[in-house]
Amino acid sequence: MKEVLSFPVRLLKFFHHKTVYLRMWAFPITRFFVKANFKIVFKGLENIPHVDSALIVSNHASYLDVLLIGTAFYGNLGNVRWVISKENYRIWYLKWFYALYPVIVVNGTVEKVKKSLRENNWVVIFPEGAARWCSKEQTQHKKPGTGTASIALSTGVTIIPVYIHGADNVLSPQSFELHTAHTMTLTVGKPFTFEAIHQEKIDETLLASTTEELLRRIAELNQPIRLSPG
Image 1 (cartoon, helix red, strand yellow):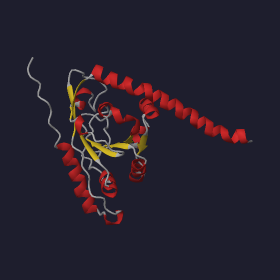
Image 2: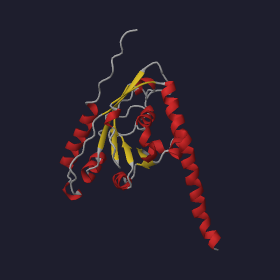
Image 3: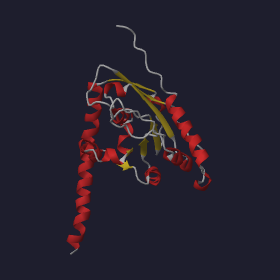
């Protein structure tokens, strides 16, 4: 009976070690693939802090954003968690990613992220929401949620702003076709924090103003490089 009861535990340990082993290979292979196949300029990598936990906030216009962020934060990739939408989590051809990279599916996101931060993880979140595939005729004016602001205010966690320029030109939201001739730029800004506030004192007005500040900090990094002719 004891052996039977211990079997699920041993099975979980087996898959855990198997996943860790796969990550040891997947991380460098993914990094090599990205650098070998795309024109990328990384700026501000010296701004990546040495902290136990952090919230990485970025704009999001292409699924390539995930690969670029993973490459830029390669040194911390083992502790990085990714917040993703339910819709993206259901996409079958992204299942390989979810098997190798721990994700937090949107549903009670704030508490899940806060728990992950307490466990000394780095969490990537896109305040604008998911990058969605849509036709050229469709336009999206989705108002950013306030979940990121709530996390930042209630924890006082270190926030690392990131801006990615040009990824949507390489892999457009309207197409699966890659245009690798375009150059992408990922810029890491200087980390900052908001003073931690008790959850009961956080109201809608404060959440709205903090969300605007987060988006401003990301947008001000939008300084695409200028390539010299020839």
